[in-house]
Image 1 (cartoon, rainbow, N blue to C red):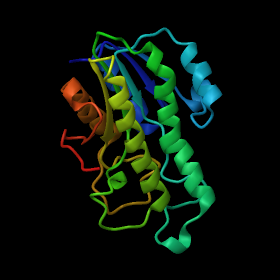
Image 2 (tube, helix red, strand yellow; image 1 turned 90 degrees about the vertical axis):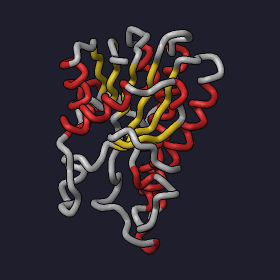
Image 3 (cartoon, rainbow, N blue to C red; image 1 turned 180 degrees about the vertical axis):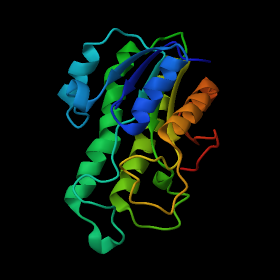
Length: 222
């Protein structure tokens, strides 16, 4: 089902901006929030609440495209000797706690009988079952935590909002400022990734809530 009224959070980033553009190209009414454009700080619950309280609800799609590969260092950790508590906590606040708090403050506005999708950008490296390389401790851990938080929220929300779908999405390796230092990966443009992710969202049903999918609609193990 095509979205008619969407909220894109993190819309100033490469993927978020592309998602907002693609939704508008599909004739959706799009509202955007970002740190640079609106002063939204997803690591500050008061900022999240103020931003969401000021919107005209409800939406049928909320897409959270916030996050970063690192927070206090230039590159992800390669080994345990690089692990640093400050980086780990910063990544948790940005990549996991922030999106979960967004969903917390959106919950009262989720329609009870109409289709609603909450989709947040996760990453394949957040899959514990698919982790064969190690490293990237803070980023992996924050994305695994995001997956766990949204899975739990999906269970709760489904109890009285039967048409709601909460999902984690892996966008592929996308050409943004986050990935410019990783030349060995095949990369999508943000526009290509956005189009693929919106097709995945379009095909989701309430049976898919609480699950983790890639840009091709294939389920990723936890």
